[in-house]
Structure formats: C-alpha cells, structure tokens
Image (cartoon, rainbow, N blue to C red; front, side, top):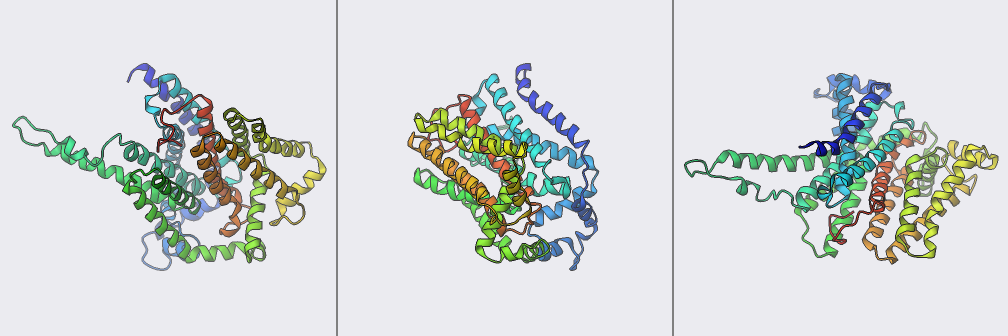
Length: 461
C-alpha cells in the first residue's frame, strides 16, 4: 500500500475514532442490560430456569441473540464498545461495495467520495438509531437486537455478491488451483489444505451472518422478501441461479416457521397488549392494521425523522433528474409535505398540534383524517414517481425500489401484528432506517454520475 491508497481508508479511521468517542460518553446499561447481566449463570443449566428455555417459552424466539446478550453484558464494557464501533464502521464500508458493481475499479478520488457519502449516511443512521428512545432498554440490548442483525444482513449479501455472483475468487476451484509442486515435483498438500479452509471460512461467514440476521423477525422478513425477489428475477433473466440462494431461502423459511411456532412470541404478544390497552385493537384484523398505522405516524410526523426526511429529499431530486417529463416535479411532493408538517409543528400551529398530540397518545386514528391523508399523499406520489421512472426505461431500478419500499413500509405498517408495545415502537424503525439509508446511498451514487456499463447486470442495485 502506498500513501494514496491509505487515503481511501482515512475517512473510516476518522469515523471509527468518532464512534469510540461517542461510546465513551453514553450510559451503556439500561433495564434490559441489567436483566441479561444476571442470566449468565443460567445459560448452561439443564432445567426450566435456563435462560434459553425460559425466553423461548415466555418471551422471544431470538435464541442466538439471547444467548450472546448475557455474555456481552458481563464482559468489560470496552468489548461491546469496540465491536459495536467496528460493525457500524464496517456498515459504512459495505454500502458502496454492495451497491456499486465495479467499485474496486474506481480511482482514488471516486472511492473517497463514495466512502465519505456512505459514512455521512451511516452517521445519520447511527445518530437516529441511538437517539430515539433507544437507551430506555439499554444500548447493548438494543444494538444486538436491531443494529447488529441489519449489519450482518448486509455482510451476508456482500459476501454472496463478491465471492459467488462476481466470482472474484472461484471457490469451486480454489483447492485445485492452489495445489502446487514442491522442489521434488510432489503436490504440496499444505496449500490444498489452505484452500479448503478458505472455502470453509467463506461459507461459514455467509451462513453465520445470515443466521444472526434472521434471528431478528423484522430482518428475517426483509431477507426472505429479498430472496423472493432475487430468485424469480434470475428466472426471468434466464440466468443460472447459484445454489446458495436456495440454501439461504430454505433457511429463512425454516426460521419463519420457528418464529411462528414459538410459544414465547405468542405469550409476549398477549402480555404486551393487555397492560397498554392494545388488546382491544389488536383483536381484529382492522385493529391490527390501524394500530400499526398509528405507530408509523407517531414516529414519522410527531418527531423529526431525519432519515425519512433525507430519503424523500434525495428521492425527489433523483426522479426529477432522471425523468424527462414535466410531471417529474411531483416527485418532490412527499418531501414538501414533511417540510410543511415539521414547520407547522415547530411554530406550534394549533390545529396540527392537536392532531399530533392525538397521534402521540392514541393507538388508533379515528379522531382525525389528517394523518391518513398524509400517508395517502406520500404513497400516491411515491408510486407515481416510480411509474415515471419505469416509463423512462429504468425498469429494474423502478421495480427494485418499489419492492424495497413495499417491504420496509409494510414492516412498519404491520407493527400491530408484532409483540411490540406502542410506546417503544421506535426501536423497530432501526431496520426501516437502514433500508432507507441503502436506497438513499444508491440514489446519491447515481447522482454522483455513477453509471454501470452493463445496466442489466445481476450485481446492480
């Protein structure tokens, strides 16, 4: 490495230092952290008091995460601080390499610009993720339950893209290619052994990152949805589908069955609903949908949602710059709506303040149609903008955006179906923010005049 190549990694070094400084000043332990701290001695007990057995039957299906939490809560706090900083920094490094098919061929200037863009977006994600009521449960518990699974999901898809789809290292022939002759003309088995373990390590990372990611129900839904899009797309393109896609998809299906059958999730759903007077609303299908809608608006319009605000701003600019139509200006409507809502809330415009207060304290939206109208405006103009993009010829990008937005907005819209109370619904938005950050990064990269020579490549966005 020369001096210029080191400059590519300098932004990550600075970002990592900022993350460490932030970690050194936060109140790490919350109620859930102290709870898991007392569970360490119960991990290996072979009785009904075992943490894993108790959590599975009474609270959660996240067995892998629940197993790691007591360990991290009892280790010196610097261990979690270091790993969490590494993973957040790693997330910023994965985004351009995941979204840009030929990133490794970029020159120093473009790599630095794209890396800095990614770091800026991840910094916004990090601030939002750790600022909106997250410390109520504890930083360690929340990071392992929401932030880490999302980062491991990115790692899973990056490894598949870089090593399987792009075939930068032909793992099927790595052993045979690595066998060489020694001085006497005999095959050197040490190199063959190294090739085997290299292949083993790659597949281990691919599946471990997947298992950790899908241990969280929200990330599980997103990854399962992603494979339901990717596999049919390969069929449509008449391309050979890597077997690892099917293995990963089957693993996601099995985990979905495991989550659905978990008695702890059902009991937690009931216990969470009754104390917060939600069971009346969640007892019917319409009530579940209505409550999910209320939780979504509680976060979107009663608080300044920086990630959503940035997404709609970049989305409007992206559509306007890519669509040669006088109607492309309508892509800015969602961004303008949020501006109006936030501005009227800031100046304490009483009619809107009254509505926002009702949204904050209610689990249904029967008091006013204003939140519903805001939601409809956002949905209609986003769909219209994607239709314009589709008609312009960018069909794959348009359909991919539509599928991603449907998944991520549906995940928030259906919060009424999950065992999560109304007050703490903000934690579930971490995954939602993460997906919006990915979409925003893709649009910014295109606005920075990135263009792929093969617009139909399976490794594009």
